[in-house]
Image 1: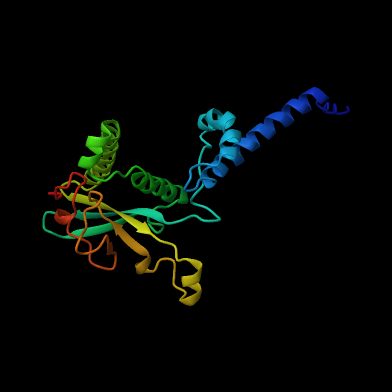
Image 2 (image 1 turned 135 degrees about the horizontal axis):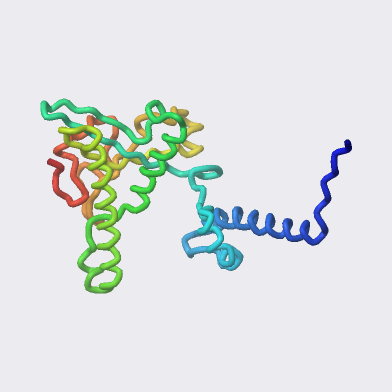
Length: 236
């Protein structure tokens, strides 16, 4: 008994499939390209025009990402450092994500997305008084953005408290820098060298600190009661 041969799709269907594949491929390429084509003067008009018909399609399939984590210039990554303090004063410090702790790799990736999201939505305390006077609408947006950040920040703290009953948790944002090529050639260092980690402080714009705008991670982590919450008050 002979096996029936598969019929080759008609020219019409091959043309339709080719168009669909080309449209999808264009959407995959144009979304990160529109992200990379942004500069000090804004987005590229040419890329913006090409990208416009694919915006809704990319949002529907969730492929409207900038892929800034990857080559050619991924930039710094952002982590969450947590201090969990027991009633007897003993403290455990954790970093999210942690490649040694978060396995399989998907769990590492999910924690990484969480820490990057917290950094992405960060809004300093405010708004500044001059902005309130000059642009009330922008000031209101500032307040809403700050409120969102505070709620997400607190939800992470609440989750840590739930995981560690009877203990107090506090978190802060950490930036992990990548050495530039020139510095690396002059003085090669490991990518996890402590000098590449910086604490991102939560303070109003324009407020200076005698200790500088960042703190070295090599210094001992602040006690949980000394790590400020997004409201500006110490975590108790």
